[in-house]
Every structure is written in C-alpha cells, then in structure tokens.
Image (cartoon, rainbow, N blue to C red; front, side):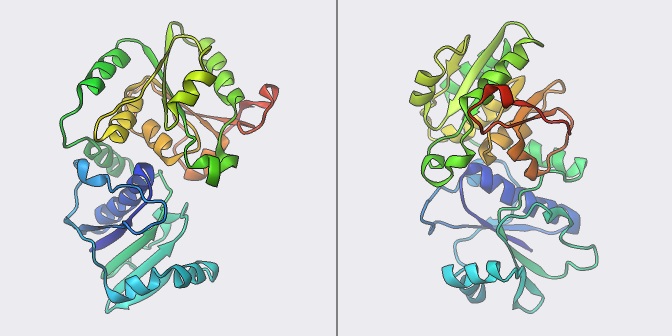
Length: 301
C-alpha cells in the first residue's frame, strides 16, 4: 500500500498524488490518501473533486507516523538528513521535504511492504505511459460552472495565452519568488514576434492587483471565477490555452503540465527548472526576478 500525506494547495496536492501514483504503477500497488487539516496555513483537500484512482481517504494515522510528524521531531529528522524510518513490520515512513530525485529513490528490489510518504515530491519526468494515465485522471468529477463553460469556449476560439501571477501568501512568506513585471512584458513581446491576434487570459490570487498593474497589456481578460471549485476550474482553463506563461508556483506548473495541445508552448522562469520537467515545449527565461527588462532573456537548455 502506498500511503501519502496530502497537504498544501492544489498544486502541491497534485505533486504528492503524482508521486504516489508513479509508485503504485511501478510496483502494482494501491494508494491511500491522508489529508492533513492541521497545518498553520490550511488549504482545503481538493483531490476528492477529481477523477483520481485511490483506494480510500483516511484521517487517522498509525501512532509512530503521528510521532514522526510531530513538529519538533519532524524538523530534527530533516535536519539530520533522515529519510527512511520503520513504523511497523515491513512498513517504511519516507520523509522528504523537497524531493527532486524522487523518481529514482527506490530500486526495483528495494520496495517491500507498505510505505507512508511525506513530502512535496517535485518531479515531472516520469515514464510517458504513466504520465498519460495521470493526466487523463486529472479531470473534475463535478459539473463545471456556466462561467467556466463560457470561458473555455472563448479560449478555444482564439490564440489564447494564459498568464498566471501568484501573489497571496508569497507576499509575506516568499517575496523572492514573486516575478517582476519585466518577465511578463518581455514574454509578451517574445510571443508577439511569433504569433498574431493573441488574447491574454490573466489568472491570479490577487486579480484586482493584476487588473490595475497590467491594464496596458493589450487584448486581455481577467479570470475570476466564483464557483465552489474555482481553483480546479481555473487550472483547467489555463491548460486549455494554446500558450502558458507560468510563474514559480506548483499551481502554475500544473496549469502548463495539463496542457495537451501538441503545439503548446509553456514559458517559465528559470526557478522552475528544479521541477525537472521535460525540455520539449518548455521555454525558460533567466533573470525573471530582477527589475531590469534588459536582463531577461531565454535560457539555453
């Protein structure tokens, strides 16, 4: 059994599920989800609104797992570089704060018994067949709102470009990951050299700020859905665009990753490279975090 702790926002939850799904496919096992509702910055559990494959969703954990997850013990384990601990016979607790090497963490003869995985599991380069199965499952199991349906129709009828701007908690906790205006204006000029009649669809957790700051961006629409699952709907709408301009955010990366248009183009800041996505169809820009438009340029990968 692959038991995975689910926490964080929608983007992080999808990364956690994706790693569990990769392991389940590789070792022909089942998935159990453990949503964590006890965190200081609480984000709602969203995976239940998607057509994902898992055995069940639980809210209780074995005693040793709860002990390992104690705030102080958990931090000490990470500081000591400890990844693997037992929590019963043939049961392993696997801790990783940020795992960019997660797909290669297990050897084929090493994975025995149950595993409880706790981490962010940032990796995208899984086998193509597994990736295709995963992408097909990330679809809503609820009726899409009328707002969504109207926007999807509009997006598919034009040279649509999604522009994702993350602010929200980044302002307080990760100000260094907020991209500068120059990144977005440089990207617009880059695209206008290649395509005509572009329409930009802005997505953001601070849409009022975006409307004021990017009012001169050209032919633009500012998406602000009010449905129960607006975050899922907005992520899917991003993926329906022909081109994605994403930011250093897991939500943003999934908006690009779910884009299955064969001629898609996903433009990202170089900070996203740590997520190890395939090079095909992705363009990385360096110096996207500096206040100097002359320094933003394409990163040769």
